[in-house]
Image (tube, rainbow, N blue to C red; front, side, top):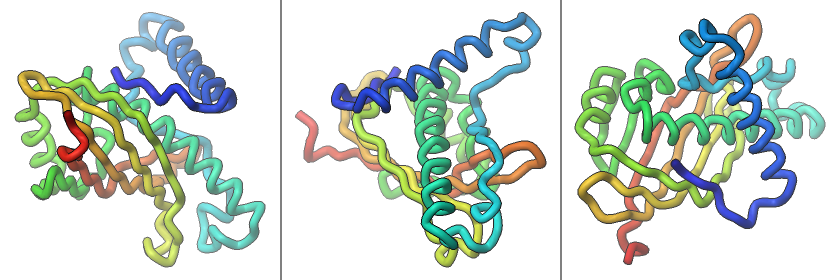
Length: 198
């Protein structure tokens, strides 16, 4: 299981523990809810009105709200993605759009079937995320589709292999429902940082 860097601010730690406690409480409410409940979705409240329409950058207040929402989604996404990768890999493609593209050390994989086949070939893993950054992508670059860039780096140990440093970039898009926003991976780029490994 990954761990975040130790120099997070107190506020960062408190927000992380609040989310962790929320999921633990939700997972232990009733037996039936445990059966149905999964963490293979990143769900947030509905985006602010301007963020869901054509003027994401309309005012500084709207933009700040949009950035805060994007950061919350990105942090939750990272928690879910790497835990699913390490412990429930067969469910990982639920986080991807149907036509999502993965570039893994320069090798292109597109579509859910190909992604499932690719992830099945990877040995079991243990990821540790040391850095997380995120920012919204301007609507003019994404045809008004609400999109967030998420960047992570850290270490990973695949079974039978030495530990590697890695860098991974995700483009998440917001899929709106009547009650909330579900974030899915549109593009994923993973690369080992071999020059930094010992």
